[in-house]
Amino acid sequence: MAYYLGIDGGGSKTLAVVTDRSGHVIGRGVSGCGNHQISVELADGNIRAAIHAAMEQANVKHEDIRFATFGLAGADREADFQILRPMVAAMGFEHHQIVCDTVIGLRAGTKQQDGVVVICGSGTNCYGVNALGEEIQVGGFGYSFGDFGGGGDLAVEAFRAVIRAWEGREKPTALTELTLEMLGFDSVEAMFHDYLDEYKRAPHMLAKLLFEAADRDEAARAILQRQGTELGISASAVIRRLNMTHDTFDLVMVGSVLTRGDSRYIKPYIEEQVKAVAPHCTLRVLEMEPVAGAILLAMEKSGQQVESTVYDHLNANLAVKERNAEWALD
Image 1: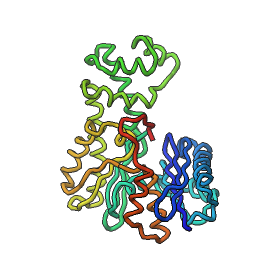
Image 2: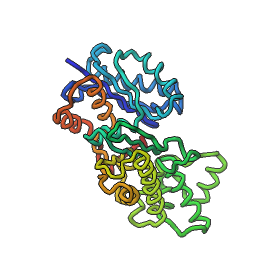
Image 3: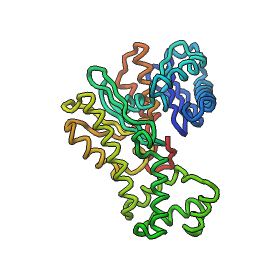
Image 4: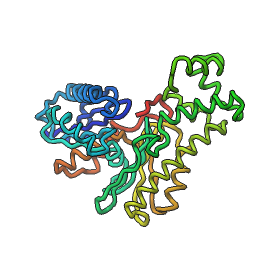
């Protein structure tokens, strides 16, 4: 029996799954941060822990794994792969590959060989591959290098909106009450001084409040609109650089902000940018966890033809959880 291992190592969570050749998930393991850019030692330990849990549940050994695909946040440049190759090789899988988490997200969201993916979780990223197999990544390196958004930036924007409204620089916002309740303060003034005095940073989960307030709050909607526009700009840059403007392909939206938030506040602004340069592009919110893409890539890399039943089995076990459920910024 052939077994496959897929790993999705994100900024806040690492998920590993083991499947058989039919796509049935027989083992699953979850741990913390799998991004070596945050900490090599932490990522190494968490990836190993998730793999161990998945393989133990599946009752398989290393030699039973026909192929393993590691889809890792931070696997962006050759400098990253110089760190990741020996780290992953030491985990003992004879046949394996390392790709960026953008690649597994795209593969999980479309059955085509070409396409574009935008990620908005703890951070943002964008990647595309055209019909010729040429690929480009735009973003993924943070605000200083041109990005905007993801949980970190969105949380700061929500926090700033509350402060600015309190100071009178902006109109009152529904984010104020929601933020005070989440952070446990009686007033913005108390929160303001506590965060200054203790050198605190706005917690990522404040980003979720933007969706809670958006139906009644202009400030929240404006922040989410900017997020959508920026993601659309990144995708448009990828499309132009890969000469995909006349192609028919899917743009897959990945990451908790896009898959577990209310996409109506972001998707139209992505679509506005993208349709202007690629009218035949179809936007799709990811329906399977990105780790499904790692499994599909592992199967294809080993030479297995992926049948439609494989997609059915993966979707049955790895469907993205309910949109409004508690979500982590992975």
